[in-house]
Amino acid sequence: MICVASDAEALAAAAAERFAAEAGRATAARGRFLVLLAGGETPRRLYRLLAEEPWRSSIPWHRTFFFWGDERCVPPEDPRSNRRMVTDTLLDRLTLSPDQRYPIPCDLPPQLAAEAYQDELLRFFGTDPPRFDLVLLGLGEDGHTASLFPGSDALKERHRWTAVTRRPEEPFDRITLTAPVLSRGRLIMFLVSGAAKARIVAQLLENEGTPFPARLIVPAEGELLWLLDREAAALLKGPIAAVSGDELC
Ligand code: 6PG
Image (cartoon, rainbow, N blue to C red; front, side, top):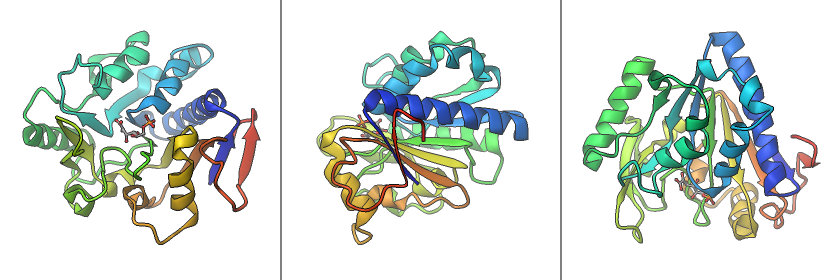
């Protein structure tokens, strides 16, 4: 399903609404809510909103567990760190216990960090590949999602849950969860905002032939939701399932 919100603020509000609904559903069904977090600018707004009322007091945070979909191999206090971004915008504003946060351990060398995170997931989920209640993802102008970049060997990964990747223009490696794990999410929610994304959004959602990394995210059994703002949706020609304006998708 594709939902279009009027602007970036409305997109964040729609995402917060779905986040809260999924938290309620997951805790009622299984006693806990397992969230996979995205980096990037678009979810930053969502995280800030979730730290405010009404979400701050209505979401069952004490039963919510946070994991990261990808990370830049930089020190945890580096402003480019996804761990730091979510910590500053959301996690440090909530009352959580240490066992609710599972950041990717980028204080280790990249290959060891990828292996350590896979082991961490194994300890938490057991031997079946992780199944998150909510997988948050973004979309790059080149069609990347998480840290799955065009041309990367990680795109071919079918068995491992984590991989080391690199974006040629960056001076550091990244760790990413692989497409088969991301695809197992119960709800996979892409958040895409801004005119710079309009072309890739149209190519990805309306032209089945284009082999972008984001196309590898194919829900195994879950739901796939594209939450766009009007600028990001501007080049879509086909009918859009819901044009929300300020209503929520
Ligand atoms: C990251 C990401 C990455 C991001 C996209 C879109 O850590 O940067 O996980 O995949 O989601 O690049 O980013 P924006 O929301 O900033 O456009």
